[in-house]
Image 1 (cartoon, rainbow, N blue to C red):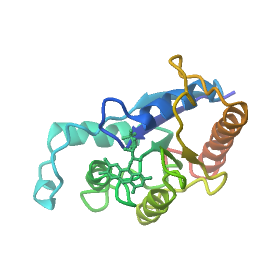
Image 2: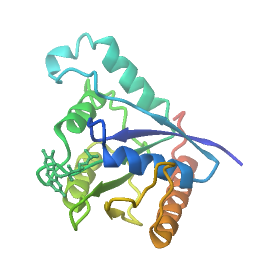
Image 3: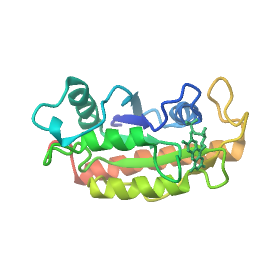
Image 4: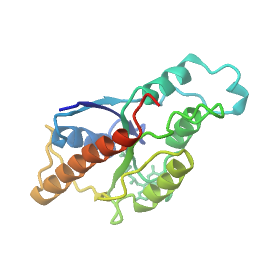
Length: 190
Ligand code: FNR
């Protein structure tokens, strides 16, 4: 069976990020045919099109990491009812210069955790509209709005709540199937 390389972006830069914790749990629950690599954006400067003629190496490396992935998984918090500025900045870098958008045709999925009851729902909708403009196919369903509660993921990155664990396992299987479907009709090399 084919293996897929999944790059994942964590929207938070915080050391104790609950979304990083969620990402680590998701990786443990994912099918073994998905290989994961974090794509960090913390060292990117703030984007301006003044850089378009001569992208800094850190931005070239960031774009290349996205391009060389079979799919991209976003695990992000909600900040002020949208995505964190650092994540938006990273997406702007990857989408430019015009005509070299690294997200084009890249199968994506969006998930996030918050202590709040709506579990990043608004941020996810914002991110989905950004990804639409970037021509990135998105897994529509299942959606996953995770209300993070202390102890929900233990020190070994295992989800302690059985129903949540089953749901997240299904989510990752569905993402696998979505990536496989997209790459069947849109192979990486076209
Ligand atoms: C938040 N938080 C938050 N939560 C939410 O559900 N909706 C929101 O709009 C916001 N807004 C917001 C803005 C800013 C600037 C901060 C720092 C936080 C709370 C947030 O969900 C909580 O801090 C999470 O722990 C953030 O996820 P990470 O960074 O721990 O992964």
